[in-house]
Image 1 (cartoon, rainbow, N blue to C red):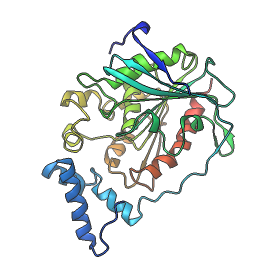
Image 2: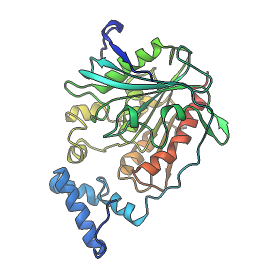
Image 3: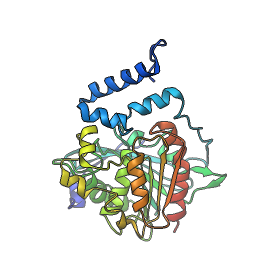
Image 4: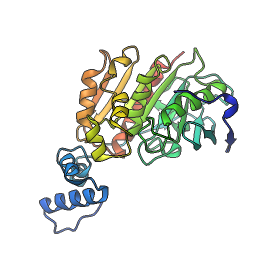
Length: 323
């Protein structure tokens, strides 16, 4: 991966359930959910098998209706919020302008040198919706168990829906490593000895692990919430054809195969018992180096679970990003 020079980066600052018919039987409801999902995705017979085995979310939708996905919302408290800055820059790696937000912790301001969290969004989201239930400024002002997090900034950015890995004409991984992080470092964020942590939800959880594996020495700690991990290229293609451009691209970004690259990096992974990506997460956990943290508990691949895991993930990063 190669990135543009500082002069090539142009920044523009802008400071500032589906209700089923009541008479449907459970079997009919499953058929209705599954049939509609497959028709909508156009994934065919192979797609049906993925739904049947819990890889695609038809079963999860049934779990939501049944209440299986219910997770208590965390009770949050915050210190007085620090400032945030939002803007755009022209990404040579993505061949388009991308939006971002940088938020500073309480008592800090632009220009301060701080550790940095890079927060990657999930599929269908962007920099403005990367977190669930809180803003970036609230995330770094969070009190966990009554105690403030260690001071650290957080940045979110638009990565598209390509699973944070290289595609022809669109490379969000290179954008993060060679454009976003250097831009933050020019602002004093994540400049050694100030460390950098990766965090993400779903597709972004996969991306956080992938970047940590593929950019050795860049990342100090990783927190992946419900990472969307496929166990084969064929599975990924059947469920989300745009996730990987080729079988070789999948192999290069296979976070299970390359988990040994995380041997010197503290890793926290959280996933719900009814998450359709749980098989991939289980394989990842087996492959992670000793000492990694894994939390598998009640929940699905849904916003309530994502939200419930943000505070402990931020607390985890806070402990390892202290200077």
